[in-house]
Length: 141
Image: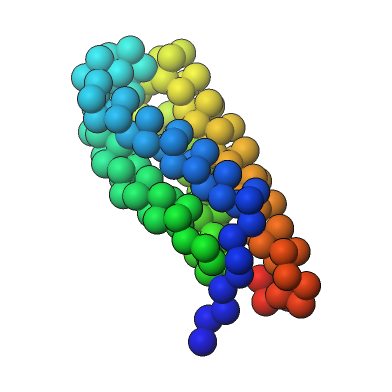
């Protein structure tokens, strides 16, 4: 049986912030794909594909936000995914495998920085879940 931890206020806030930001970016990228592609030089397929992904991701975050308890492995997976997203943004910048201009570079840098902040906040929130009930901290590790 997989153990769960009580949701900490810190994790709850971090999940909602991630959901709000991800949802807003998804709406932006799906509603304004062509103008955003023209502005940034990033491929429209990349923008719409990641926008679609973020719709599902936002739904997951909102479901977790509503839950009174969390699965530590799932939060760790979300943290790892945010770190992976940041690394993917930086890899696109370094490899220059897709065309982009200064606005595209700025968008990728802002996304990388933003998801790293969210990953840190969510990791802190998970640690605080274990602090809510002594003895459960070891179960979160």
